[in-house]
Image (tube, rainbow, N blue to C red; front, side, top):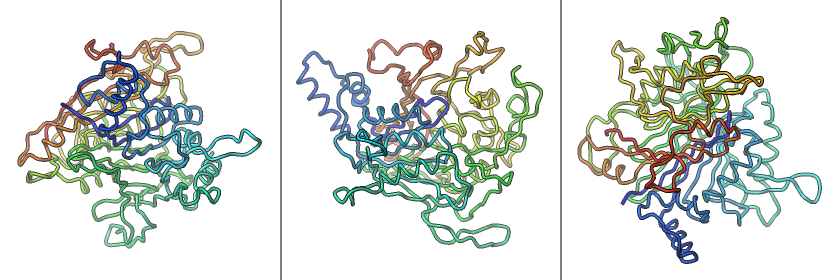
Length: 509
């Protein structure tokens, strides 16, 4: 028997971003399926527990109250807010019978419309009796980057009005309202005091924000640790403020950066932070942001106004998530510093982000990209980044020894290889990207296999395999051509349970 309690859903919100993290109670899922079969004896539920959740979704079985805890990071654009809400309801992350949602927390990575605006559809609704808004669902907590004297981002004031509705209410709902929590620079729980020590700025006061997402059986905790926010990064001892490239505030630079941990499984979420895109980030040849690969890119040099957050984040990952030097039973095991199993692309695959040096530090097994149609304004993911992900080896910062590319598969929410632009069909050679083996899945679901995590945890030595299952559902695609380009159908033995996949990946610990 195999189980998957931790679920990471990278939702297809076109050019936006939305990630749902769930700690699932599979015993309750089993009970819901049994109840459905009692009502309909023709149902044939799968035997393996890892198949129960996708089976329940395929049969429209109610998953309310099957979630221990959930964290939603971003909600896409306003136009996708309804899709995100429907997804949370279908997967049991929201109980439709309750206004207050004690098991759901929400986080905004940064104040850009493609990340924050869709959240409005979750917390408030139009008053059918007249003007104004009414509360819809009140998450337990909303985490957001501190707004310390910055020029207001477009839509920020409007969003805060929605959040204020969730956080306040009539006397009957007080005490069951949303708690609004600022995430301070460096990902700290309070405003840090900075003291100059030699060439470094050392943080004084404040702890890194750690969100507890509960435990799975065998007492394996799930946590989300914030290591950067507000254009500042917290290492093990040092604290780095990153200078802007211009006088204007770049909201991308202020993204919350966090690491999800569950036993020996880790996932990295960097929001829309940038690196260098150039030589100093380890990007050469067809990986360099200034290397023109497609006719539509023209002859103009690329320019980025983003600050380089990836370098201090890479250094913080090396410091805060060290290599396991001596294997012990009852402890996670990591073969190198900064390891993650899953990396979600920074800034949707922009060529000034996802530097080779960062990839070489994290060495992910799986890579997920939240991206939209090739006709959108930012044109992500770029071919330069795809080339970095497909390279045979990566250069390491501060080392002449390259490391082997560890990525086994790149998964995309939605990208078109062939598009219609201005009513004229253009091939990928004229406009678009070569995905180089990447799979387009719609909504991407990543689930570590629990038994493999337990085996690693209990082993007194190295050499155990971590297994991760990935599947997709083609969700929210509005472009027929995108659906046509999805990977081949699921293996026949899985029937209709998995719309796309599943695929399994392993790495050694």
